[in-house]
Image (tube, rainbow, N blue to C red; front, side, top):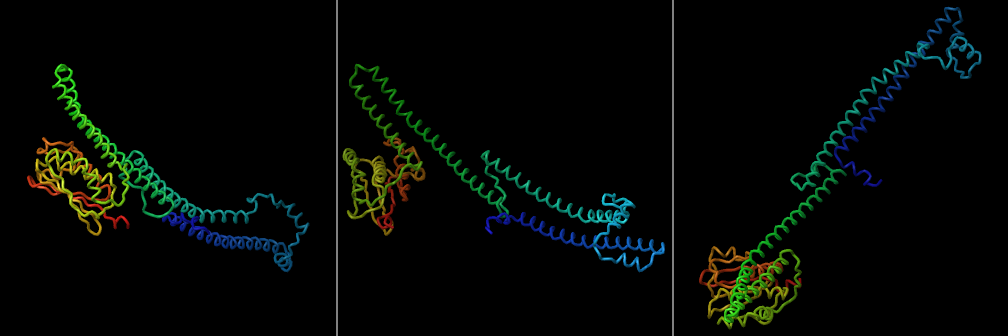
Length: 420
């Protein structure tokens, strides 16, 4: 027999109910057998009483005892036509009502009373246990229905009962798993909505300043159309404001893609010298113009596993931040070293450093300390770098002190880890 056919027996309440039905059936069969024996004894008593009455009547009428004995003990089952006619004459026929046959009526009344006395309590017990089982089942379904209604309304505090085994509880377990998935999906959607709202709020807030500046520059240039020097000056400021807006939008798009998991990092083995050189290539001209130095020190053969384009972006943002906070004649140093499993890239400067109260906020979006109010930047470079490094399974940390410079440390897997 297929075991799935009896899987419902795993439910403890059903097992108990089936055990009761089995025991009840055995009791009922036993009672039926005893009832048959009892009715047989009653029928025998009735027949003996009837034979006794016939014998007594015949003896009183002078019939020989031998004749009476042969008549009462005859075993011949062949029916006599004369006997049938005699019974018809005295009114005893198959259609005769039981009430006109005293012995049979007495037997019938005894049988009915005995059957009722036995079957009524048995049936009452069966009905009571069945109603109790159905009552508990109904309560179970009502509780489950209430919990499912809460799930529909978005409330996942309660859980469906799973105190036993069986098909019903497996169904409850499956519904609970579905509810857990819906809860996780709902939480993800809520986080996405909050993230989207915060992102839009951040972009709106950050765009207000350059837009207000552009509006002011445009108004000044309109009023000073006959002053070429003024127009040239504010045209340059307009260009800077537009460049800042472009940087802001590009950075926000990148960090939003990273946060929402829409970026797939294409890791490969990258030579560190080439990676760092590509990252700082756009900043060397700026460093020279600001009388600052970018030093790159490390073995030409060292490699790590990373997405070259995104990792270059992260290194570029950190070096750009270092240049922003380093004065004239300052130095930004990039070094690296390998361990058996990780590659460590250090980017240090001898600039103004970071105050202790600002270190824990340095990777927050748009965060700018009070000491950075006169420096370039929009406050997204470091958060973007952190998202890129951590998105590839790496870590980023920093050590800094006021007027003692800052060192950023990036850890990424080396070639051996990638091959494994």
